[in-house]
Length: 297
Image (cartoon, rainbow, N blue to C red; front, side):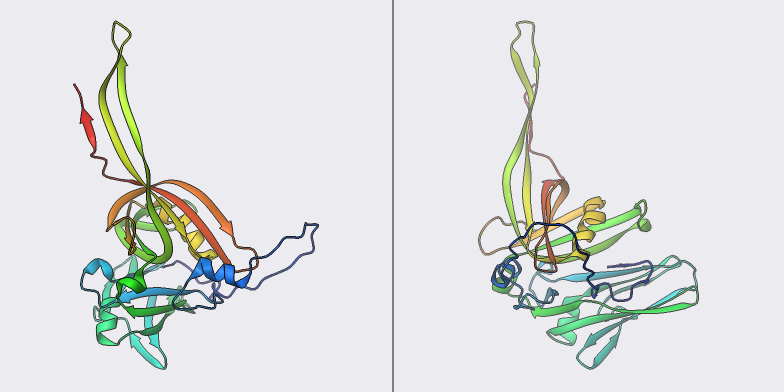
């Protein structure tokens, strides 16, 4: 999650405005259809989006992290993060619950949910952010994070996307020269699809086609379940522009994909679910390390 300014302190609580326009009648999705596309452990009614995270896994890749980055306008700007659980508050000012960094141009905190699980336990959490920038103070409370002990069955049907950003996105965020880490786990379907098969060849004097190199490039189809518009925007305006991407598939059946380094090959579809506050996105990933190459001459 990235904080540059807090003009709207509650971006997840947007009002809806209705304007009368000429239109055709459509059939909205039934609640059960929306729920089937959501399948959330945290909010089974499908009314509220909550982020599922895991700790307590035996392997590092099973445990989640969530990154918060605040970019300073002045070196005197400050940010304070507080982890909330029920009526309890835990100040995030050191490496107790993750990784804390405070330098001239930014302040960052990467929550290690395994540390939170070990020290506090499972449950529902939020992160309160208080920013003082150019003498103006603003406060924001995040979406809710549901922390579970890692279990293969509970994690089934989720995909974690990790990405690193540096440089500047025009009309967006300036990340600076250091690659900054981000991560999100979503209810999604990730499958390996038909790979690209590339043959480089030439035609000899007898007009015979001679292949001198053959290559196979693996590709993966990603289809999200229900996500709020904020996360859809995160994909379109940030994730697909990342320096580096890694995907991990948590599925009891299907392709085993663990921290596979990929690039975005295409944005296949974005769709708003009529009658709900949710969206869908479909992407195609292509493996970044393309080393299935055979040279024939």
